[in-house]
Image (cartoon, rainbow, N blue to C red):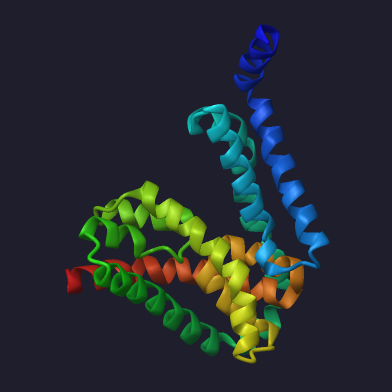
Length: 238
C-alpha cells in the first residue's frame, strides 16, 4: 500500500498524467456519445467534465495541479478557434447573401441572453455581483470573464456559467430547434453559436458543415455584440 501511495504521489505531480486524463476522459465521452447514436444529451464534453471532476475530488487533487497538465490542451483552443474560419470560408457566399439576417439574429440573440440572465438573477434575488457575473454567460469565455471583471463581477463564477451554458445549449438546443420546426442548417447554426459559443459550435461541427460555419460566425459576432451591449445595459439598469 505504501508503494502504491508513493507511485501516486509521483504520478500526480507529473503534468503528463493530467494531460492523459483529459484526453482519455474525452475519448470515453466521445465513445459513449457515438454508442448512444449521437444523442445530444450524451454530450462528450459534459461526460468528460464529470469524469475529471470525480477523479480530482476523489484524489483531492487541486485544480492548479491538474491545470499544469491540462494547459497543453488549453493552448490548442486558440488554433482550434482560428480553424473555425475554414468552414466559414467554404460557406462565404451563403453568409454574404444572409448578412442582414445574420446581424439581426445575432443582435437579438445577444440582447435576449443578457436581459434573460439579468431578469432571472433579479427574480431570484441575486446580488449585483452575482447578476453581472451571469450576464455574459452566452459569450465565449475570455470575453465573458473580461467583461465580468471590468464590471465588478466574479470571473471565476462567469467561467462556470459560460461552461454550463455551452454544455446545456449543445445538449438541449437541437431538441428545442426540432420542436420549433427549424430545419435550415444556417439558422440552426446561428442559434447554437449565439447561445452556446464554442461548445455548441463543436457540436455543430460534428453534425453539418453549414451549421458549423454559421455557428462559428455567430460565436464571434455574439462576443463582439455582448462586449458592446452589456456595459451599456448594465449602466442603464444599475
